Length: 151
Image (cartoon, rainbow, N blue to C red):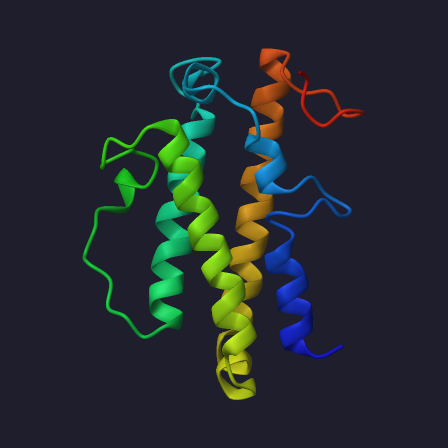
């Protein structure tokens, strides 16, 4: 297995449960109200965490594709600055993560080698925040590890 293959396995973990629960499974079936719930005012909601993932995954995707990013205040990374609905937020992260898979599959070996460290950190970052999402769901009583999501 080469570096590209390893990174693709990590990138694909956003939608496929492996050793860990995938990001997609962690947000599956949530309502807007559940996604916006916070245990307290100093915590982030699931929606805010996914907005944060959208912000960084899109920025690094643009960087990988050599597309300049706008200057943005990093303090706004958790905010829904576009006023998207929860369903639109889910669609946005799904689109970004799918595009990540495609660009890495299509990238040449040199580009992968040059960006391997960034990609590894990005996948770890996504996994870290997926764990936070699961914790928030557990606080809400919305997570059943046997079924994945309580129905």
